[in-house]
Length: 162
Image (tube, rainbow, N blue to C red; front, side):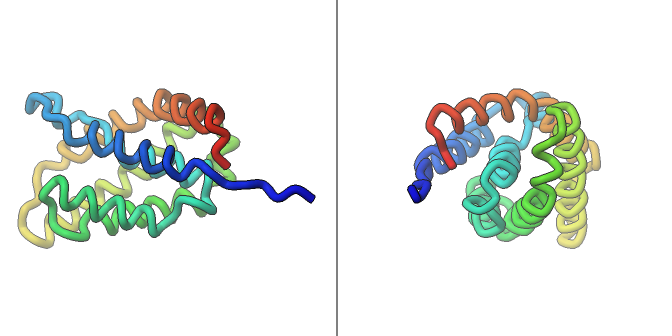
């Protein structure tokens, strides 16, 4: 029996790097508030596509890197990214059979959960911004999900990542 080889770790890492770069590109203030959460799109995609390779630990590490790169409270995004990764892995078999537009609704729910936790953390430390600063990125992330999903699925298929 031929054992399937797993590869593509570099492609997964590269997709996270691209997502971090897209998250750090400076934008005008008006566009900054509607920027999709590219790192979460990549994290959710890989948790759904390869739950045995990308999981809560990767979410935690990605969140810590995001905290350091965005000058946020250390552990704030690590906690939310790990929770989102956990939920995506727990629901991955259901989410995978949904059409892309229903997946986008699921991503919207996950993003609203992430926004609620982030708002709660920021409220605890006394720096809670307006709630619209959390709603707009969640909506734009859900709207961007079909494009991100299709692009990443094509990359996964082209490089035969399993």
